[in-house]
Image 1 (cartoon, rainbow, N blue to C red):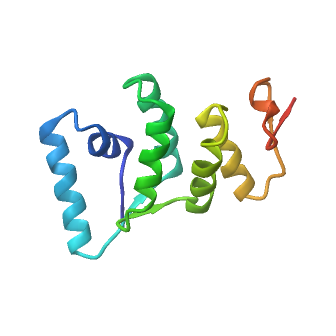
Image 2: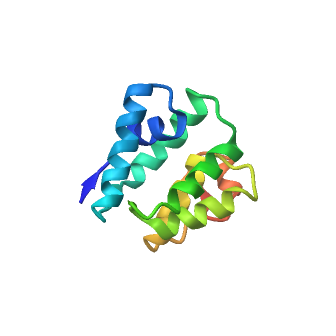
Length: 131
């Protein structure tokens, strides 16, 4: 199995570079035809969120929809997939920072009872506690 970097998913979702976008589609098609998977590290999703929000100014709803659709792709093997699925669902029900929610759900999946933070807004979410 091979892993993919954030820029692969950015090209796939945004398509802002036609040549690179075509290469990503070809990669995905070949992976599917070969009945293989591509590994997506959790940090790639965290970086994806940050880039889509800050660089491309994509709405929260569209980001969450994109992540949900990526999770359905059988060629993508996500690190901490169950945490990502829960994050994707919970994030649609509130306005907490997406990166904070992803951190919290990742920590919860690893057995943490909470995440200690100085972030007052994040600390209001039940998986955080204020330091």
